[in-house]
Length: 382
Image 1 (spheres, rainbow, N blue to C red):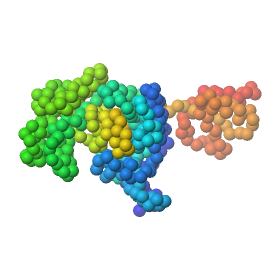
Image 2: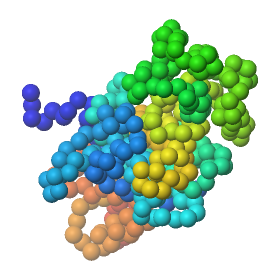
Image 3: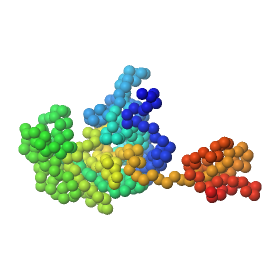
Image 4: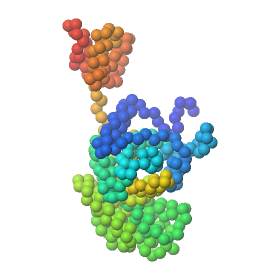
């Protein structure tokens, strides 16, 4: 095997795609800034307990682990940025009011989270801390939709769920971690026979409610069916009411519900959403409410947010037109250099043709040329 072969599901990003990724990254950050979100840049490497405490087994399995040669402590390469941003909110900013934070940087996964996915996503996200009301949930939803609109994503639809539905149905049921994981897996797979077997000793209300969740997916009438099928527990009634309210606020957006959906990390505590788009094989965006994510840092603040992989987003949208450049001759004459500097200062891309490379393929699709005419350097259309 060649020494230059990269690990599985790791790839170089070549100029054309890299340009598109960078344009989308800037577009997404500018969209978040328009909502008042401040940029933070957490480190790629952190102590393992800070990265993983309270996040659940799924994130632990996705995290590369190593020993710090300075301290001897276990460290991890982040697989998700949300716990880091919660730490920043809790310990570094320590604001008493609302904090709106966004980020964009690489994360590393021990294995791809879906077929053909990269193990090195470029994760963009936005999170709002300090407000427990549905207004924060709605803001993250609207911002995520505006981000996809700015990226020119077509055929968007939102699928919603609520973490408290399953938690309410399991409240008071004694389950170890392994049994709980099997119940969650059966719900996610909508495997009614497996779920019936796993819950045969559960209280009747819990068992019937969990079995009902398996068939509760579709458009808004699903919520009405859920009100009839699920036990009238306070947590369930409030969760369904919250989903109704959020859906009503997104006029013009196709909204569906999958009340058994448990995909994603275990820290979600409230309304959750996934956004799909035409031509994308999986959700482009996942988010929701995760009020308990900061508790391990000693400051349990209300929190809601979302994240997406910019690399996956690039694959789901049409390539952006390359901004045409200006071709210029190479030379050391002060007048030529001044003319090139003035064009670059005005925001133009100027590509100097080095001596002996006049026939090289034009990667920037230059549509103009800097030429000397009548004693002046001027731009002429090719």
